[in-house]
Structure formats: structure tokens, C-alpha cells
Length: 428
Ligand code: ACO
Image (cartoon, rainbow, N blue to C red; front, side):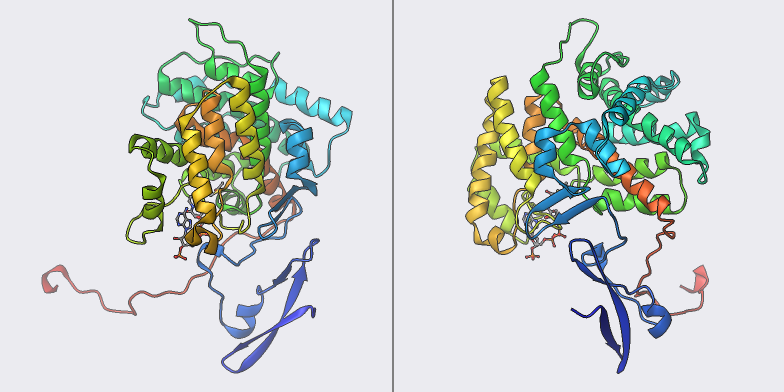
């Protein structure tokens, strides 16, 4: 294939370079097009626009492939653990024994948050959604570590911010839940591993002893791995764009958390369970809800179905479906909502509307069912996703800064009024 592309605008031809990725993906580099021709390209929702080159995650939506730094998601979910995957994403290679120990030890050392964080937390009413609390607490780290605002810090100083954020994220997440239910917060227990520590902070209370079930901790660890990165999705693109202005890592990731919150992105896991519960309450007639999803006059969509890039299947959904079966069996949980989910999936997979549009269950279709079985309340689901996505956001932010990427600033095609004169209030 030629390594240039030709674009004709108003009879004039322009030759543009075509760049190739390490998996032979081709992209026309249009960055010089406006300078040469005066025209821009338009692509609402960036459906066909690459915003960057990246060496972190490879995703082939047609073939259902997902790899972090070259390692398949199937291998990592089965053989690795969340902190090892975090190191891999952020630093680009699997850690040696020594690197891994140092990484885990420093994360464990920094789990405690400044005591004044409690005061910020107490300022939130119990009606606050934990995602809003989480993004606020992450951004508030800029106040406790003002040196993190300096865009020209050394790599060691950046590493310190990274360690602090990974270490404190479970504390923020668990505390956002405690605030909601009006219980005192639990301090981290550094004798526990990353996920067990989170579960203990989330579920222990002064009235009852809480023992972390290893089945629950392992299932959660696997879910975090599956969510750890997903190349240039809505929240990651947000992190990179915010960071491109040289805003701090904490501010950039706080923005990413807010982007993740929406039901078309990470908020889908909460929306899936709410949908399944509504279907159950309504008598469990999946056909009726399928018809609603297909009706263009009805705003209802089958939550947990469809994906911007997976037009075959979401490989994470396959792993999660199996994990959901395992966890439910091991914990002895019978969840009628799972039967509704399975029924909906079966119907959708043979329904021409879904087949023609290549709408398959995505990662969030089954993750909510596992979270429920693990005892995690519905509006904490997206917080779980944020905990999982954190190393991906950090890796992407770090890559963007190290590559010295320019500020993200899209253009537009203006469709408003042409120039007109101001008319005073009395004359209107
Ligand atoms: N239910 C019913 N119809 C759907 C669904 C759905 N879940 N998803 C897409 N469609 C239809 C659209 O109506 C559209 O139909 P049309 O061609 O007749 O107009 C067609 O499929 C293409 O859909 P788009 O919205 O154009 O696809 P896009 O790539 O922009 O959106 C998205 C992807 C947002 C994920 C969409 O499929 C959706 O809303 N799904 C439900 C929400 C969800 O599960 N989000 C989680 C995504 S995974 C993640 O963020 C971790």
C-alpha cells in the first residue's frame, strides 16, 4: 500500500502522509491539510479520528482483540494481578521481582490520606453520588500536594504522585460510600492487599466484624484488570486533553472520572442493573423491552449493549460472563436478574436489529451482576470502574506528557448567524 493519500478539494489535489501502527493500522495524517488547503476535516464524536499515537493498548474491535502493552487481556486476567498490570501499563514492561516489590510496598505505604480529607468529605450531603465525591477528592489532592501542580517536575516526583494516587484511590472510593450511608470511615489496613484493603474499608463497621472473603477479593482484582485501560475512550481522551494544557495529573484524572460517570460510558454498569431490575419488576417480559430498544420513537436503549469500537464482541464481556457464573456459584448467590440478563443476551444475539448493527454485550453488561453478588451497592459500580481504569488514565497522561503532545484544541464548522448589528431592547 502507498504511504501517501491524495485528497482533492475544489479540483486541487493534496498529498498527505499515511502512517502505520505496529499492528499495520493505517492513518492519514491530516495535520498539514488546513495549512495547505484551508479546509479542515469534521468527525463528530471522533468516530474515525485518531487523536494520538500510543504504545499502551492495542484494540481490534472487528476481531475482538484487546492487549495491554502486547499482552492479551485473557492472559493478564488469568495469570496476573491488578498492581502488576498497573505497573505494566504505566511503565511499559512487566516488573522484575524487585520492581514489583518496590512498587507494591510504596503503594501500601501511602494508603493513608491527610486527615483533613475527612473534613472535605463531611461537607458533602449523604445524597452525593460517590462518583462526584471521588472526582472531588482526587482533585483536592492538588491542595495537599501543591508541588504536583508544577508541569516540569522530575520523573521521580511524577512517580511519587502516581504512587500516592493509586494508593489513596481505594480509600477515597470506600470513604465516598461511607459518607453516603452515614457510617464512620475506616482507615486503611496495610496488612491487606490492594483489593482486600478496599473491601475492608468499604464493608467493616464498628458494630460487626468483617473478614475479607478471598473469592470476593480475587473476583474484584480480576474486574479491575479488565477495566484497567481501553485506549482512547471518552474518559481517557478527556484525561489526555485536560492534561495537554499542563493541568496536573490529579486535575486531569478528576476530569476523567467525571467523563466516566455518564451512562453511555462507565455509568452503563449502574444503568444495566437498574434496567434489569425494572424489567423484573415489570414482570420479566424481555420481548417487550427488546421491542422498546428497537423503537426509534422510544429513547430506551438496551444498556450494556453496543460499543463504539467493538463490532464483533467485547473480549472483556466473555471473561466477565464466565467470572460472573463462577462467582455466583462460589458464593452460592441465586440472582434472578442474571436469568433476565441471559435471556436478553440470547434474544439480542439472534435479533436482526442487533445483529445488523453489530450490537453485542459489552463489559458492563455482566460486571454489574458480579458487583451485586460481591455486595457492592449499585451507585458504587462506576466507582469500581474508576478504580480499575486509574492505571490506564495515569499511563495515558504520562505518555501524553512524555511525548510532549500539543494542547488538544479541535476546530469546528460554524453554523450560526452571520454578522449582524446589535438592536437595542426598545427596538426589538
Ligand atoms: N440499544 C438499542 N439500539 C442501540 C444500542 C442499544 N444499546 N446501541 C446502539 N444502538 C443503535 C443506535 O440506535 C443506532 O441505530 P441506527 O443506526 O438505526 O440509528 C446504531 O445502533 C448505532 O449506534 P450509535 O449510537 O450510533 O453508536 P455509537 O458508537 O455512537 O455508540 C454506545 C456506542 C454509546 C456504546 C451505544 O451502543 C450505547 O448507547 N449503548 C448503551 C450504553 C452502554 O452500554 N454504554 C457502555 C459502553 S462500554 C463502556 O463505556 C465501558
